[in-house]
Image 1 (cartoon, protein in one colour):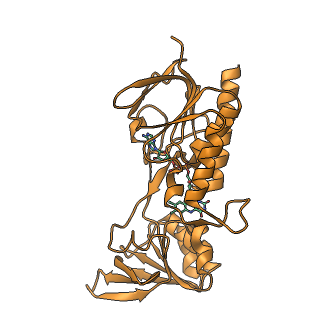
Image 2 (cartoon, rainbow, N blue to C red):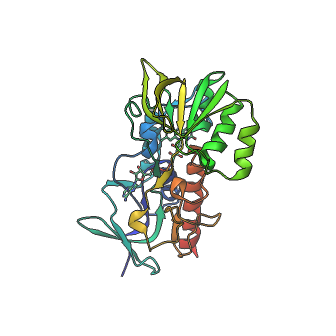
Image 3 (cartoon, rainbow, N blue to C red):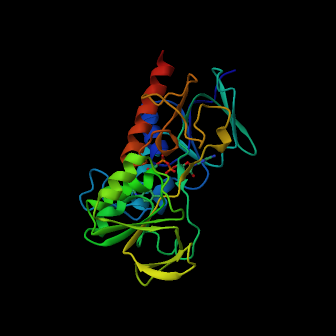
Length: 306
Ligand SMILES: Cc1cc2nc3c(=O)[nH]c(=O)nc-3n(C[C@H](O)[C@H](O)[C@H](O)COP(=O)(O)OP(=O)(O)OC[C@H]3O[C@@H](n4cnc5c(N)ncnc54)[C@H](O)[C@@H]3O)c2cc1C
């Protein structure tokens, strides 16, 4: 059976669009499949200050539009539909299924990204981008010299809290247990820093403010006391879920669903690649997703050329 496509890319976020740019320019017949909107997480991102080439920063939606236009200019089509399953991954002709049809392809690039877990409290969505953030490396700089909060007690919370401590006035860690989950070395580094303050056995119940976040309403789980705690920003680290449930059992992934690849973005299955935030060991940064997508495209090109 002849495959309809050389490459099918699952997801039109930064990783998928970058992969498509390269496969398109390499004259590979490419289809990008996207369930929500081209740009992925960029669509919910305000000002991005750490993506090279934009000295004044760039807004996520504007960048998404530019990336989509640049990629589709070279041939790849974007089909707006949700991929529900993949089959015959180990065969030369692989199958990608949506609710109403199947597509055949010689290679698959998985670029389905993921999303940060939310606390699910009042004000979290309203103040997202106006104080509530899920990425210290992305947004910490906006709160230089101010008092901020980190919610969570795992490695990500301690690591990103430590990064923030070099920029902000103070970092208050809010964690629902009286012990942290983070590895000891990260805990000790934070405990030693004079910038850290601790609200252990506390939870955030609400984020409040006017134009921007001003306070978090917190609850002391030991005493039941509820009070407002000032914070110019709250960085939330309560997990990240990769969009890979539809690939479970088909590609090698960790317990949380992050897909394992080598440095060429190759999974263990010839002709199947993964890139961007869905990948294990991704640093979940835009520039990294772009680089991953390019690497995956080049690997697919080499696979198809040999
Ligand atoms: C609020 C916010 C602010 C950020 N700020 C910065 C910043 O300042 N600097 C920085 O470097 N990074 C930042 N990031 C991180 C950066 O945006 C991501 O690392 C990057 O966009 C990930 O790209 P991706 O293509 O891997 O995944 P995604 O952007 O998640 O794209 C994956 C795409 O796949 C689609 N998809 C998933 N499953 C399916 C399916 N079954 N079928 C079809 N389509 C599917 C999704 O709809 C999505 O469009 C921020 C992220 C957020 C959320």
